[in-house]
Length: 313
Image (cartoon, rainbow, N blue to C red):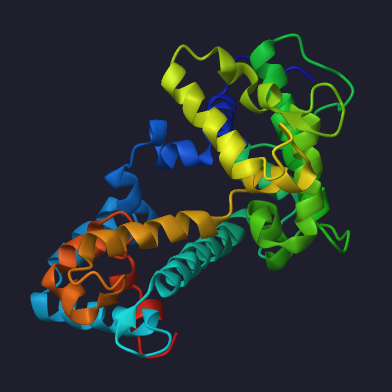
């Protein structure tokens, strides 16, 4: 099958693939190793609309909801927020919103409301039509061929998520398709998919050169140094100059744990007034805007979500 002129769907998929390719997710967070406050605001407070809604709350209501959130973060109820407690809360927030988004998507994709999403329904939602490529026939046009490969990868992931081999995905299976990092039975598939894409010499490992891929020709030497450092210090745990399948996992499916820990430590560093390496409610209320808009605490959305500030989580 050959597609006609490049469609909007093709452009969108290629753009998304370039932005969210394996190992590149953190670049959106720390381009060239620098912190981005706008990313932080969106990561935990939510989108700008949520920040604006937070600002609209009256001072008394802001403080009331913020105190309720602080109390929930404080798991041992000792009056202080530790790095571990903040990190756990941030990870829970990430997962909560990922699951909420997947549930909303499931309803949109389930065109006939039968509580399953078929491959055809997924295509219709994504591309307004059902697309079917021949797995064994490459396309002449480079962009169309890239689209074909990405589409076939999505199809394989869809089939892997479908545990019961039914006509479509249940909500739980759809979550596994959209967020394989949250589901154990998808782990092996994700690793194998990464090896097929990056292990060019077929030795079962990913070398530094394979890790960098075409990006190794990037004219920005600082960016290359950052990526090399990430390969050596973050992923290559046994220091053998290559990534084995288990070392691949945190690269191709970034774990939120590391991000959450760094966010928590940064927040404590900024707000800990007495140097005890933890935060009291008084320290947070001394500068609540910093707590709500700093590196690790974009909780504006949570102040409008009673799942977080209500008495019971």
